[in-house]
Image 1: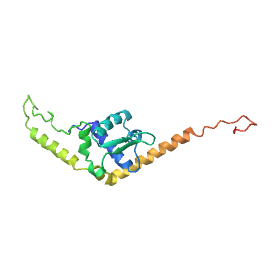
Image 2: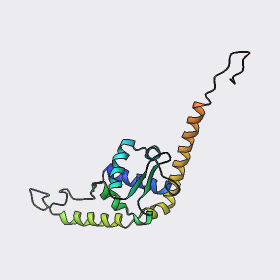
Image 3: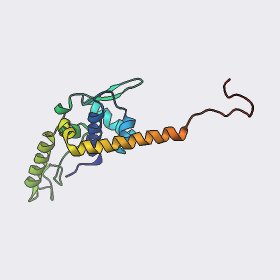
Image 4: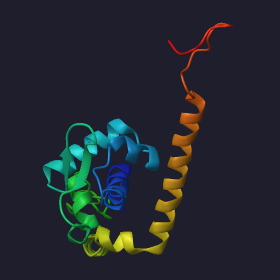
Length: 172
């Protein structure tokens, strides 16, 4: 089966968005940080997802992305297809010219497997993924880690108050 990082990252980013966009738009930078995916790569993926209507963007301060439909109405397979990914278990890409421009002995077996994988992913919605205990646990851990990062950044930067020379007030 050829499911590359493009399809995996798109599904992961969409699940992150589904979990975190219930109250407000989510920035790609937040998804990139939580999921350790390059921001520029996410921008490319989300351009494709937006063209397919799976997400829509909100511009301006506090902007970001929201799902284009309810999570229960978005199947995992739709996301994979939207980013031009194919779920194909054949060596020939389904063309039937597997070996010496002829169909190989196991071609139909791999085509059947590809169809079953497609049906499996088409039958799983993001709402179903969000309801899984394991998904909720991982999302909660990622949120705690992200909050810890933000707190340590604020602590490192500290207040930017200059000390006054001895005998003078720091307040102008």
